[in-house]
Image (cartoon, rainbow, N blue to C red; front, side, top):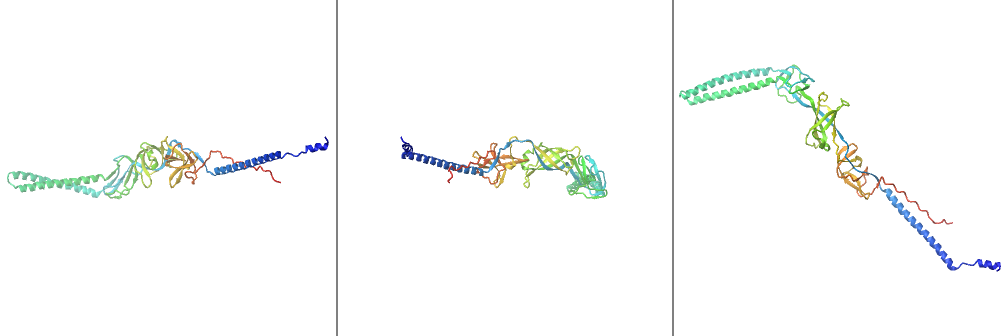
Length: 404
């Protein structure tokens, strides 16, 4: 075979069927590439939209209510008053003759504090004694006369009318004598008030008289001549808010802090409450008692009263930052299983520092949002702060070859 024939045999044209099959394969491959690219791009756009929507959800921190707590302390202002205090006024008019005790002096019950010179009362007393003597003489004469007439009327010497008159006169004289004696006893009682005496053991905390000063009987208002106070123990009055009244039971312990005694604490005990709430302040008056053997607790002193409240093991506590205040009252934002907000109204008890006591409306299993946004409402979907953030989807590059 010649070389020309060999070249002609090698350059044979392909059959039409083979060419068609190859073209179909190329077209199918191109279609698969295009479909895959479009599908990948669509999925990427869907993932990107989903990621963008997830990033738009507010991220919240979730906490749960805690049970119980340690012993609590409630600090309130209090006023110290004497266990017993009495203002002494004059019951007899006159001039101050002498006084024997001054402020700060210790006195015993019945001890004379001052004497009053009462010349007018002395004259009234003397006159009352003479009136008694006169009335007694008149009665004795009338009584003797009545007895004689009683004998004579039996003998028909005098009439019954005369006997009745003498008997009636004797009874009248008896009444006059009794009246004179009563008046003498009244003035004698007033004479006892010429001396002002201490009504009980205590300390003179005020004196408002001087020698020669005129005092009038019947005084009962204003400043007394003496003020005597028993400060062997003192009473402390405190206005306690309504939320803490349940703790104010007789026997509850407290301590007193006074600015004039820094670092010192004085024990006190709750003895009674007023059993009534003042509508203006929503507080109740509580009385405590404290022993005062050293006399350091003075009446009228301001004190800080520290109540030591017993812990409540069943109490639920939340940070105050979890509360939402609005028209619906106090609420908290909780999260259900679908990560959706559910607003719950709660009843708040006492304030425990940075936490508050929740009395009702919440259970220990509730997931509570700490520091919720004011715009959150029931049904809003949120993302938990401890959930890892999703990464943005990768951008799909085009598979088409660049055109020249």
